[in-house]
Image (cartoon, rainbow, N blue to C red; front, top):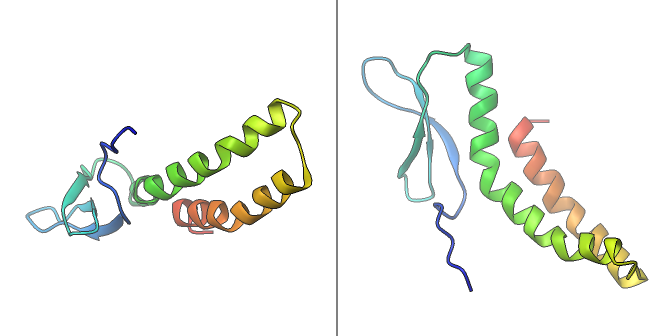
Length: 102
């Protein structure tokens, strides 16, 4: 099994101290993962921050869905596969909501 190389866990958006007070992405232990330059508009920076903070959830949702997509492409669609797909929808929707704040 391949070991995850990115910071695992829930990422969050926060302010970074210092002269400019730019934003940052923090990992579950408060470790700084990314810092924003302050060179973009505040709206664009916030949208980018939301997408980055949601990255672990988006990755997990896609990984969970891969076996189902494989079943669809191999014409192995069954009632169980459809039920599995439906069961994964809430986690996919939650990841998208975190990324987009919808």
